[in-house]
Image (cartoon, rainbow, N blue to C red):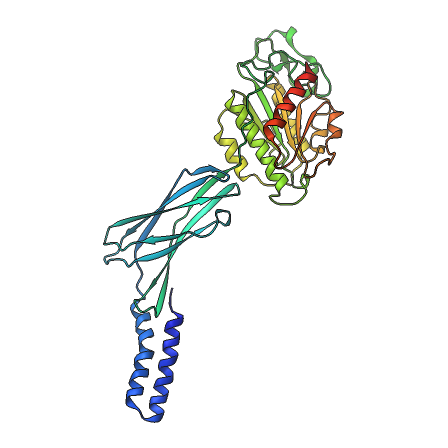
Length: 397
């Protein structure tokens, strides 16, 4: 859009005054001066109505970063028009978490010529953040008129949650066996720890595990051979009412950081990880063997209005059908686990995010067999993780 600048409007007003005064007083020189002053902004506006034909694209490296890490954005402009383009001072539209809008200087370009310019962005919030479109302004040499240009095209930067290194995997969670030692398998409603799986054609009927069969409604058999990888189910309580304030509050963001750190830590150390969230569906979960997919999910996860208990219950039953494994929960309030697992057989671990010290939210979980680790934003998560694992192993030994 082409507009007359403040300087141009002022010159136009002065020109009209001089024109009126010259005509009223009969001074031709004053009339000519007024006519010239009034005509210049109008002529500048008329001559600048053309549109620069510029194609803009951008690349981001890397396109996935963690909170606080920088990314380099390279803007490429190509002149598609027949005429030489003017010098452009452009401004990139970016999402609010990426900070102030960066300015990009695009030099003059001949027909078919390309120019590149770059800038850095850094986000303090996770998510998918938009970059673009690019906006530029062209002014005439006298600054009497200005034309705003918008070059379409957008790109997205994926900002992952903050990952805190948790150190070495404790002995009870390390190794290659699926659930070696038996004492670390989960069981529902206080039953003895038994590794079970779905019945397959040809299995010995004497190996049917009747308590699990009665509980699930499907034939389940005892599994003697352990899988080659340890399974860990992570339950993430992302209910909106489980945290002290709505939206992306500090406790909620800390819960996301705790969950993401545990997921990355376990997958990196050879675990087959299963992730269930309160906003998910009440059905079985899929094993995660790569880091990218859960981090992409946690990058955009938001507080949910869903009910966590049925989702977590289905996830635990599904893990049992696969042969059992470890259970780690990250919750805002303990009621998310009351119905899901009343009496676990091996004391799974629950990280309860408390906004204030001594909030005392987790006492009910301890009586139901959970090992509780209270954590607050800014805590030493690696130390909390080590203490929780060590105490849990002592209880189940």
